[in-house]
Image (cartoon, rainbow, N blue to C red; front, side):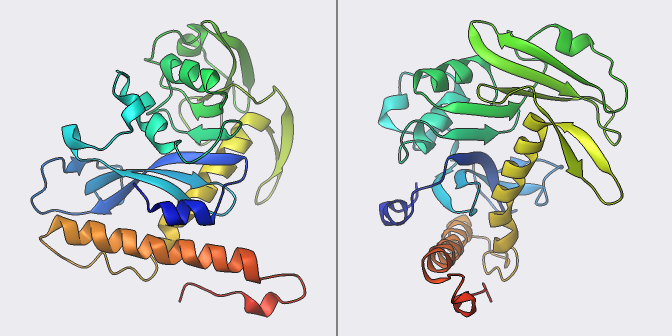
Length: 264
């Protein structure tokens, strides 16, 4: 969990994102994770709640297996994803629009967030229950879009969009977005894309900037056989980034752009 002083110093805008944040480590650590698709294949896993506009990390959970510290209110919850959300969302009030990837998306989570009066947009794992069966069977042409209304008893909207680069369609569910189509400027052309897909990409990419900033002048990436040192310096460096974000948000104005500080 993050220090409450950092939570008091900054309140997020409407859009927030929940994502995994990893600390590269190959030493002895019980719940050490392995994922070849991550930049650090062997890592200590963290779950972070991030403001999509500024990349400010509002709350954080380090995964310790069965010893992970979840909120007291999540003790009766069986869904792992709902436990993570219930813990990370403690510092913020209802009404926010949350973005996350398919690792978390389920009907249990959608029902929980609807009950708590949060909005949600996230990619869909087609193996999960209660999502439209048509999503699994569809074959779309290049840049074709299809919308599906409702997910079980939840008033939600699903979109399937086929991009040129991906072999399978991009499937996203949302309890707030509409079926709008917008024009997005790419390198050499303008592409029509569902508004829901564009919003998801923008909000998740902005959140990833925190990890990107952390990698520039990192101390935690130095070799160490003690996992707690890795975690300590990783959190310490995040505190530096958060302090930088607060400073620039409060000191820099149009009349005084020279006050802006850089991480270096």
